[in-house]
Image 1: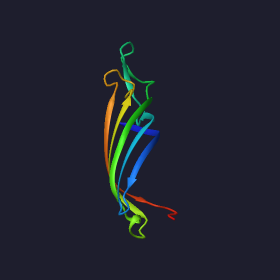
Image 2: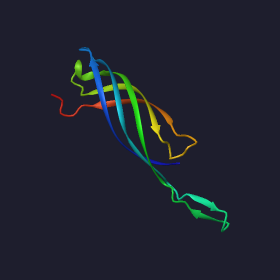
Image 3: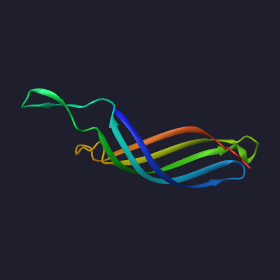
Image 4: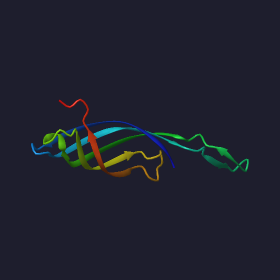
Amino acid sequence: MGNKLYLSSHFFYRYTHSKGPFADLGLGAGIAQQFHSRHLLQYNSESGEYEESGDGLYLSLFVGYEFSLGYDFSQTTQLPFALFFKISNYVQVPYLGTQDLPILPQAVTQLGINFKINRK
């Protein structure tokens, strides 16, 4: 188990109908910095003791796409928000710097609300 920091950029195309429904499709790429939340130990066969491993930080690249459907309430009312359902799929390379699992596919499903600030 560990933690991960992302830095990414996505480009989206959105179609919004005048009555409120919308759909968008996005492509993105970025980098991920993973690190373990605990110190890793490895066995040293010469000394017969466990020593702290130098491993711990892993930099990887990821690419993916996102697709969402939703309803934008600001198109028909004065409510400044939209409800959405989004599916995202990514591929991360390399995963934790291992040869055992060099590519990690990831899928994310989101159900959420977008609030519009400074709507004009």
